[in-house]
Length: 136
Image (cartoon, rainbow, N blue to C red; front, side):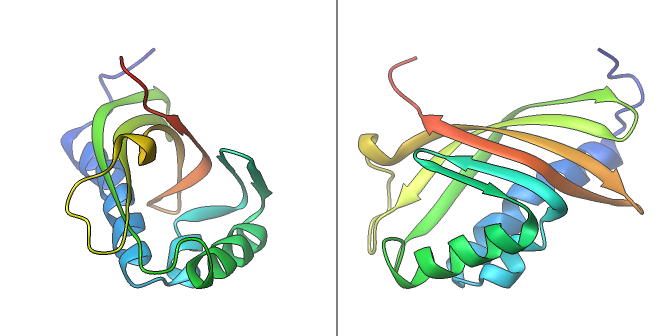
């Protein structure tokens, strides 16, 4: 793995993607959420597989009106690595905040893997997957 060309500017741009997702979620804006992904991205959540930006947008739009209504999300980068020119792996910890909650409940705590690619100077999600955080 190469990290020497993963300069501070690129690291900051990669770390900004989770902040974009958090902001889009806070607004329950499925369009803004989906814009963080490439056209052919994959999003895997427990029990969910979405392939493509349009499917991600559709799923999140329905979820924001249904099971995720009133929720917020949090995610903090814990590791970021450049694995090839223009390709980064980001690991975050966070979870879904229930309406009115200030802390993530253990049942909603997650770890996530983000595969990001640089396209036209912008870092976008090519693949996202999360799993329950558990104990370790």
